[in-house]
Amino acid sequence: EADIYQTPRYLVIGTGKKITLECSQTMGHDKMYWYQQDPGMELHLIHYSYGVNSTEKGDLSSESTVSRIRTEHFPLTLESARPSHTSQYLCASSGRDRGEQYFGPGTRLTVT
Amino acid sequence: KNEVEQSPQNLTAQEGEFITINCSYSVGISALHWLQQHPGGGIVSLFMLSSGKKKHGRLIATINIQEKHSSLHITASHPRDSAVYICAVTSNSGYALNFGKGTSLLVTP
Image (cartoon, rainbow over all chains, first blue to last red; front, side, top):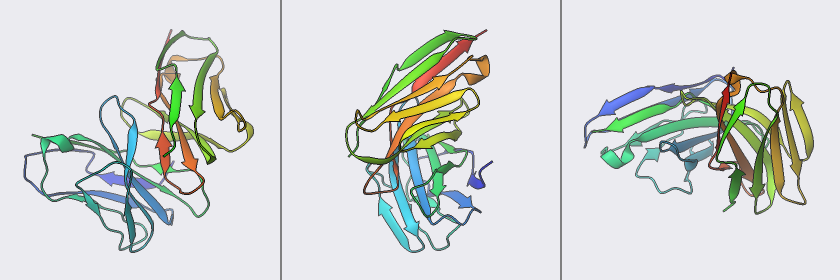
């Protein structure tokens, strides 16, 4: 079983609140990713990092931001949540080569 | 951007049937992944392949690089195989995945 963790698993929050979704991995992977998945839809890349102090935006435009201060930690922040942010957010990591990606259990976010 | 197409979108099978899910992609890739997503939302990597064929238990994945096509086969299907199966590719220029829409499989007893 992959050692990649996400908290919280479920979150219901009001419009305008600031939230941070946590993602941590204990595998020492240098590459980490955030994917967004709306119900019944495919996953889309929103952010990725290839190492400490390296972050890039993905294909899908997102109002969220990320940071990578430590190898094992890749948090995602929404400064002001809106109902359009309601979705599932999945964190993943992979090692040095173009290898297998390991996924966290996901955070299901609902913004009311 | 890679484009990944899967078929069928939905599939219902009876327990014991042989199942095939297809995936086509349109540009050069370094690897193709088959993933499984259960109703709770968690995703598990089943296979990563760049050529030939891989087998794990009742699951078999094949890829034809020239035709840009991959198949996932499930032999002797079981209700616990019910899940969404997702094809994804890693392009030659990056490490992130580009996903297909998924195939929702239901295996009935």
